[in-house]
Length: 228
Image (cartoon, rainbow, N blue to C red; front, side):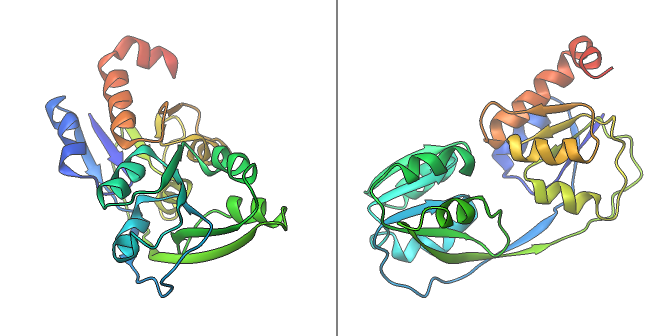
């Protein structure tokens, strides 16, 4: 039994798989290079959609907007640990975040993101001209297109729509393979590509996705019947 992971994980995140005797193969689908922020002061609201942005923000932690809208509990916890003392609202996705942000008093919105990102926030902000959007590229994303070994995968873990796209760039995965997705956007990408058996973690948290995988693989009868 071997599962395919579409990115490198922390040792603490891999440990549950090891304890459960689940073999895995890591095929990174992108490389992340932190960049430096050139602006020194940020007035208005801030939006962070990926933990990858935090490396560039360390030196500016006390000059960030007083109100941050963040996707993911782990990102919110990490920025608080860096010493941020402003207000933080946490969401599971940009789709969930956007209407809450737009319900606030119009102001400048600073989006701390990567060089490659979804355009949901931009479209939403541009539909409301009272808000002004400033983009700050905090990291460079370089797509990787790994060639996978010939293997019958027990499951695939996809952590973003783009990671799934990159995995499939040079590989044909069996669409009957169970696909575990970190969030609804990745699940939608999987559906569009014909995957039949899709599992979504309750929240976009890697640890929860891994636990869902372990639970399903260990509950063999339920797992098999659910994607038979």
